[in-house]
Image (tube, rainbow, N blue to C red; front, top):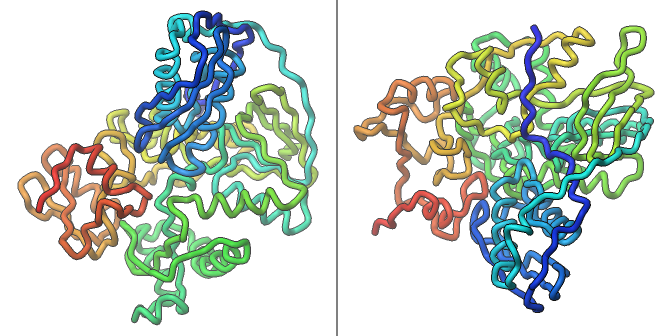
Length: 461
């Protein structure tokens, strides 16, 4: 079946080539401030009478790696094009809006003509045709794609990674980052008895025995070696072992760095220190190149290039799922309407997966098994707005103040139970022993003071 792919989320190529006329500035340096994703973003803007000379971010509390492209690209483009009409960075929309708003306020104070500054001057651009060759091409620069790229390089291959978003990281970068593995070194000192067989049992039965045993066995047997591999690359994990939401046993590992920045930062560090891996962001794969029925390359569209890439040994498709594609979600699960927000990053739209099925007979299985989480922000779907810790340290109650499900159940069990409650709404209750301080942060690096501020909550003595 063919699907109309929704792709409104990729950055359009910036084609402002004529400077907006920014006359009548009062020369000087101006400060502007506006809310970003978490807190205010402060910028310093220097102007002369005719133009914007520089824009600097002087203060922010945005998420590392996730917001970096927006914090770097938008100020540079405002100066380059002398315009506020620059594109927001997909995947960092709140940060982008905050940066643009802060610059706007500074330019207003400088006496700039905001109506003129906000206009885009559109001209035609000609993209360069470029050919790339590598031993291995990886489509998708999230956790799976970068892990594949690093592993291939360690085994002697040259690698080209193509990522359609402005930054690498995918869902891994914004995930809670809990990593489940049997780990006697960390579990036994905490009195936790575990085994690979038990991990297999939980995984197999937790998936209603629908998973392929050989794949599950490969997964559970290699989970801890995966941690050792990451540690060999320099990634750090805390000694704490806990039970992440929806897991069935305390074998969850927490990276030392927040969210998925530990994973992605580790891969990026390896790539930066080793020749032979090229990463292209803002590069959307448009087609697969087949020879004798075998995928040997891809055609892609970059911000400034039309790309043809050929692989000597193979093409790895690691583009993740389609949780951000409402049309596909509803096709496989009619309950997943547009009214249900997603925790996925905006690039999770699935087009390359279906391209592979259509053009190369890739066998897509299990697409109907879409996992729902019961603890997303009811407004935007984000997991970062929770004041919570481990499964053992909280209870869920509905609007009547009654518990309605076991908090250590499977995620689908909890979510289905939540759907049956009034307004599909619940409160999470923790006690004084686990309630975080205002300086504390949750599993998604959300500082308590920002979480409370965003919900306009009142402190209770």
